[in-house]
Image (cartoon, rainbow, N blue to C red):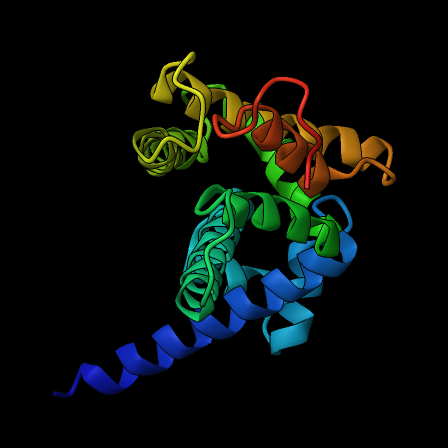
Length: 207
């Protein structure tokens, strides 16, 4: 019991740092957010921040994990609130998630920059991105297969291959959007899904 107090305080401070980092990076981006700025926002020195996370890269990986957790919670909430499923359900939620990234440009910058750096197996974010790809592929494949089995999505492409294409499309759209904010990320994903719908005869007008 004597160790619970200090541990609890340390965990609380870690959460405070993580929340501050998420907020600052959302507003100022990957390159515009320093450990010094994060430390100042929580009343610590830069060394104090790194005491909880080890390195700046490790802290930023935790920020990306937290963003994924918040996105997952929002996706479940949105799914629970649906009273009438759209023809594109459940992949319409994926399009909405991609579109929502336009509201957090700093996090998009962080994700895109670290995704490239993490291609190096020795990078601290490599395992996170590798595991994330596997999990995203599993979720998207399940959604695609469900729609194919329901007769709502073409079976001319393998479910796993389409899941990979959708993931790659989302990541690529984020990079394009950083260069040109007029790129409609969610709309592009939705347009592709409409084109792949099995219930639309060739030449039919989209709703």
